[in-house]
Length: 121
Image (cartoon, rainbow, N blue to C red; front, side, top):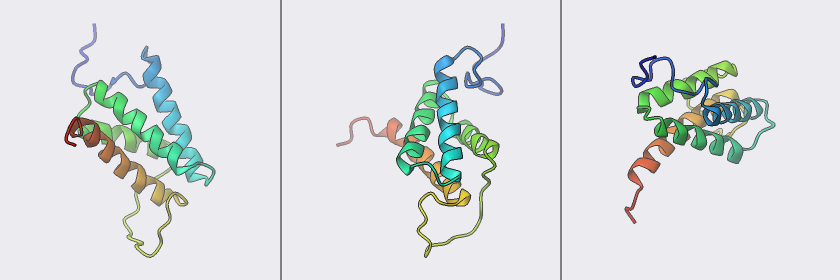
């Protein structure tokens, strides 16, 4: 019996028996790769991020764990952070840097929106 509760190495997203989690991760990988190649749509990438974040929250992942997972998937696709600010260049999802930045921003927003946006209308 493994000790799963910390979420250290097995958050159920590697395809270890959480078929739903594996599908969500694969959808995110495909969306990230397509966006990095200029073939994906912002809507698909954002939806993939939303689904993955929702799954991680169901799995009781902390915000830090969620970000590490997302960053890991981005890194697998060869997308690394870029520490430049191109305010003039409003490139939505055309460069790997913008893909990275947008996915991280969306993931954080989704994580907290689904948590705090329960009924504050």
